[in-house]
Each structure stands twice: as structure tokens, then as C-alpha cells.
Length: 416
Image 1 (tube, one colour):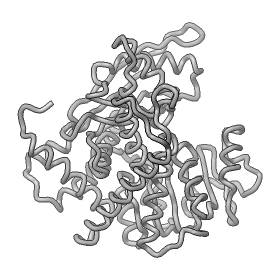
Image 2 (cartoon, rainbow, N blue to C red):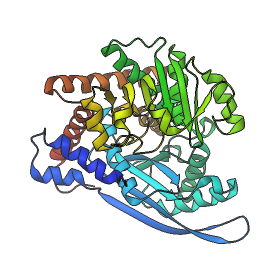
Image 3 (cartoon, rainbow, N blue to C red):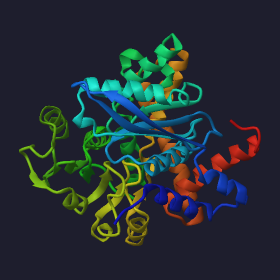
Image 4 (cartoon, one colour):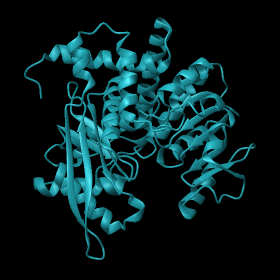
């Protein structure tokens, strides 16, 4: 069954606005992206051939500030996927109360099939194509699936060359040596731990010894696993695109991260049983962290999920039908717009540091991150309790309220 992420984002929005007393024009206005750019651009390959790639940059909303959102390199990127991710970014930024609107970008490409030189050529050309939208006061990209700090350094350098001087605040997720922030690399994964730990406290589930399962062992999944491991949790299974590894006695996460850096996959780790991604999702555990792609928990497997908490490290990992099933079964969901907001929060810190050229310590950044995410969790918990709602609906209501209030205060025209 095909699950369209834009349809999911719209359905979640419709579900939330039913609980709000908003004017009809506001409901319609907040539903649609503000602007969408599609570019088709040439890139020279190592063998001299020229290939044409398609890329997107979408701004969902700008009433609270410039747009913020990652750039994804993946062969399955679609305009609808980018639209959905941009909308979720609007709600995510509003939920943690940082002055951004939501944006997102992507290029239809399998980055693993390109050399480093080809990726650099692609990034620099794509940056030039979207340069009419991006800027430190208008739209600030960041890494996402298939991109990394090196990609952001190329993006910043290309934009800066067009400006004639270095512009570190045009992008976040850069290497520290070119204006990146300490703590940014692990921010999303550590943020997953902060909100999961808060949920466990509310539900009286001790984190010490709690069984944790992580789907996806990229930047978010590996850092979330490491942060949970450091808190004393028992990470019993992890997976990547090649499959998973399971050990009921727990995995040595620091050693596994080193192994993956050398071997490129978790599946060759010797201390555990190899399992499929499908099996991994249905393992009995206290916390399941889906940190891979969208639409991983569906109507087909939701009845088989045996976690007490689903902490959405990825964007949109649970379909609308699965959401209903998990709620009916009493499984507590920490929604993506709250659970993985650590990345955009520290991106905000990096942007502020870049604008002022004044940098903070990693300890200070993580302390600020924890304070913001715990406050956002408590706000969502309060709304959920007061209105007898699930956390996803409560989080989306809270975010939409904040964006709607800003839109009303600014008025219909003029608005940039």
C-alpha cells in the first residue's frame, strides 16, 4: 500500500484543527505551502558525462520568521514528501518556540552511487539553483538524510562566493571549523533521549535497564541509542538499511558505533543475532525508536508492536491508521515534531552563533537544549491532559495555535 506523506501531514492537520476555533481562511492558509521551487539541473560526472537531476525547495510558512529545514539526498524524494516535511518543520519550530517557519529541500539522487567529487558538483550546482530562496534572513538549510556537515560546508562556500564574503549563518549543521556549533551532530539523537526520559518519568518506567529498540542507525538512531545507553538503558536491537542485530542481553553501543564506522553496517556485528527490520519493529521492549524513513509503522504491523513507548526519531514514521491502532492498544507515542526537534533547536543555536560570531560551549548548548525540549514536552502533556487527547494531536494543536496567532497579528497583507 502506497502511503503519501503529504496526505498524512494533511490528515494530521485536519485532526488537530477540529479542536481549534480558527477562522476558515486561517485554516486554509496554514494548510498550503507558501512557495515551491522545482529545479532540473546538470551535473558533470567523473567520466565526463553530464546528468540531469531534479531538486526541490519548499517554504511552508514564514509568519514566525525565516524558513528552516534540511536538504535530503535520496532516490525516492518527491515533491509531496518535501511538502510534508516542510509543514512538519513549521509545527516543530513553533512547538519548541523558536522563531522559524518550516522549509525543506531535496534532490532525487542515490548519494551512495556518486563519488565525493560528483556530490560536491551536485551540491554546488543545486545551491546555485536555489540561491534565490536561501539566505541567513530568509531560508536556512541544514543536513538531512543523505547529506552531512561536508555537504553543508560546500553549500555555505557556494553561497558565500556569490556574496563575495563568508556567510556562516546561511546554513546549519556545518563542521565546527567553518562556523558550526558544538553539539549539533548529536543534537537530534540526544533530544530523542531527553523527551523519552521525560515520558518514562511520567509513565513511571525506570530508564535503568529499560529495553530499547532502534530502527535506523544513522546520525539520529546511533546518537539516540548512545544517549539511551549512557542513561543505563539496555539497547537490545538496532538496524540499518541492510537489516538488524538483536541481543536480549544488550548491545555495546559505543563499540558498535566504531564497528559501523569501519564496516558500514550493523549486520556484521558478531555479538548478536541477525534479524530483519520487520522483525525488529515487533520486538518486546519498553521503548521503540523508529529513526529511519517515513511510513514504517503501518496498519499491517501496528497490531504487532510490543513497545510501551514509540519515540519517533524519524519524520512521519507512523501512518494515520497505525496511529489509531497504537493509541487503542495503549501505546504512548512521542510525536516526531516533538521527539526529533533537538536538531532544529541546536540549528537555531548555531544560526544565532553564526549571526553574532560568538560561540557557546557544548555543555551550555546541551543544557539549553534539554531545557527547551523538556518545556515543550510539558506543554504538550498539559494540553493532552486538559483536553483528553493523544500527544500528537496535543502537540499539533499547540503548534498550530502559535502559528495562527502570529498570522492573525501580522494580518493578511502585506506579508513576506
